[in-house]
Length: 433
Image (cartoon, rainbow, N blue to C red; front, side, top):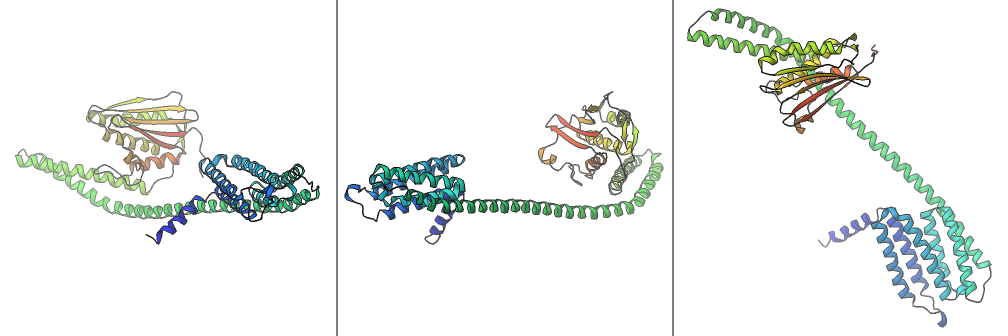
């Protein structure tokens, strides 16, 4: 612990002095307090004698107060340092007046005072402060005879002002260079972040492409066995259908279950194939309202068997527009299927169209349990599903179809009330090569 304590102290001090303003306050206090203490070594005449070391202590406390103000209220830093500069000039003037006017050595305090402030405020403020210092020196010399003339004040102005101006110029160039370095660093960091993101997306895209190729191959390979199983199951069902025994009834139920699973597997295969061989949209002028109504009528019998009511509300203001009817129908159908799976007995599905400015919105709302925030973050992710036998491709395909039409898909949900998916499509003729 004894070894690490000094290093921790140094680290804390470095963190405290990270800001330029606090560092400037420390440097200004150091040069002014140190200069005052150094000049206190020179013996003063009895009639001009002051307690310099007490002044050093009070001056150090005053500078500590400046540092505290800058730390507590960094937004007012420039105002604080401006006020401190005025006070410092008046304090030096007071020392000159009390210690001999033109004969006092305390005029030397103007040198570090002007130089350090020129570094912070810039060359022109530094030059102005040098002129004010010369005038204060002349005023102190005039108030405390003998008058030394204008030569010493003018020499002070030039000897202090010219280096201060040069130092201010250097400081401004250094600030501009540092600002440029910080800007370039920020740009470089942003570029590296974008490159890293692009690399991750490229790796993900390559992984998904590999999965897509494998899915396509597997789907092609299993289609023929699926068809053979379905055909044999159908023939077997015909063979046992006429038997009225208990075994025959049980066999019929087993065959029906096999055919249901084969149908589900066939639908799964077709969905993978649709994802892997996503077609280019063929844009033709058509009616969105007619397409939506047709999809609702297609789904209505299935919904009725599940005890779900399907409601349709189309906006007459929706004009005819160019879109791929087959693909857009598939996108809406995917949303309706998801809604049917989310709604329990006695629930409802609502399919609406609406014109909003230069877009047409197709909304599919269900009265299900809603979507949790955790699921919502991954809802459009490929192969992500919460269903035991889902593929995780339905919503991904719907989003891809909508994006191919130049639109966007969004969703909203209230837990326990339901979820709504909205397809927003632009009303315009899309140019495709």
